[in-house]
Length: 244
Image 1 (cartoon, rainbow, N blue to C red):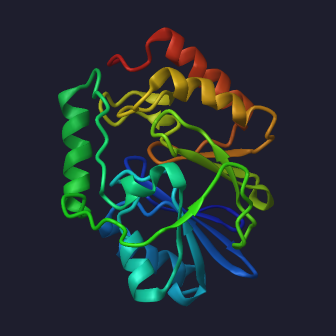
Image 2 (cartoon, one colour; image 1 turned 120 degrees about the vertical axis):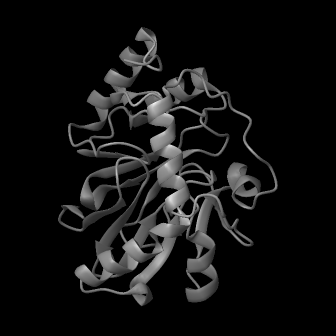
Image 3 (cartoon, rainbow, N blue to C red; image 1 turned 90 degrees about the horizontal axis):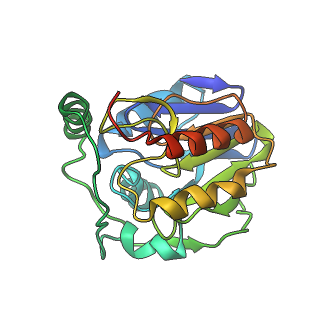
């Protein structure tokens, strides 16, 4: 679906990935689940594009619900996959996250895992090759995405800022739909390695001036990056992970 000119989403509020469309080609941010491949092809076709127009895939981190079709895109179409150097081993499946689940509601958990299973989340293909990046890098890809380190959810979690579309893609640095409780609105994300560090890292989004803040899970936010940081901090102080 088109969110704004040159800005598209595939997936839904449970798991999402994004496309930036420019005259120089397309940059994809995150790869959702393996079963989002068909949605990717359909979205590209609706844009008058195809897979040959994709110049790179940038991962916000290396978790399985963000790398879904990444290896297929790399292997079959030669598209480079970028991930922060601290999450490269995670994206290759060499290490597994050990974050606590925290509070949850059975219905929300069931919906998340049902959707993940239906979209191929039970048969993740890890990356066999990645291109590493660091905080502060500006990638030579359409939209000139700038990498902003946001450690906490994982050691190599990043935001991907694309000024030309006034959007920052934040992966699981925050969420607008908690997949384990069903609670909606800006809040900390579950499955986070170091929750306190994740909240502290959000200060790096302050002053960015992005209109769109696009999480891996939840409704796209177009109320500005400063405001969502304020709301996530307030939710964290309020214990947002509890069911509501």
